[in-house]
Length: 125
Image (cartoon, rainbow, N blue to C red; front, side, top):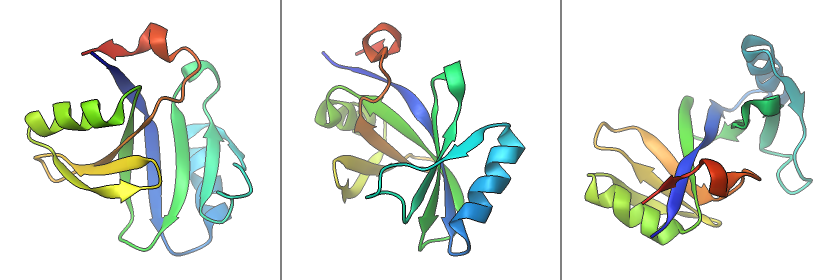
């Protein structure tokens, strides 16, 4: 048995100025822009969603711009296996997370649990 839930959305931006992209998406969605850890600062900006509980980031990428979602879980391998049984494909691993593709062609990531109240709001599988 394991748990998972929608963690949030990542706005992938090909090239360009990361701060400008983060300012646009922050203003478009009504969230303040913040910086993440120094290790992440060169490619990520966080958007503060307040009590909404979603993790929203703007990310600099080398592929065409798109939006992808993250699913957080307490057991990455179990969640990846569950999603593969539903028809998703495992594309690769980046750091601690798994990049996947839905049967519809949409990319998404399975990441470690992040929300402080994860156990109280996640789905049981």
